[in-house]
Length: 231
Image (tube, rainbow, N blue to C red; front, top):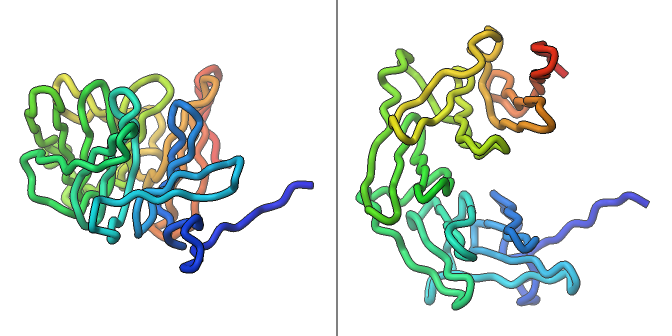
């Protein structure tokens, strides 16, 4: 029988989820589920149906906004109150990243070919190379939109970074450090507020916000038929 099971924080149970406010769930290469909450990074044990929570030593107020895999088994974690942290999987410890920006409120973080794609809010987008420690700001003012805002950053299955915005879909070219307008043949995408992007079996799916309220429509492009549909 198909059913849902709800996990809630229980202050008397150290193995319960660390908070009832969950922002992100991430599955690593080994199949482990990492849960980013308002109170730490939690890993879910499927066999025991229990949670183990990690936070920097002496600090339980770790408000996580995104989690992604880095090199090896390490994880990169962005937070809404403590900037960017690297989680050492083997030692189960955190190290704060000094990346040339003092922002503590990081909305999202994506690891891509040795770079961290960092979104600090609104139109602010950065590319930080971990090895060279070089930080570059992606200019969005040249796009010609006065109120341009980034809604989501997606690493899609074609191994490219796509940006969902309040003006449709863009691709991030990390070599030229610029945003490229995508799917210009479909005018409806140019005015859609794109919250999520998925490429599955040659077909594109876009989750579009309806006037920035939580009513989501799906826009579908079938590459084989070059046809756009609203589901």
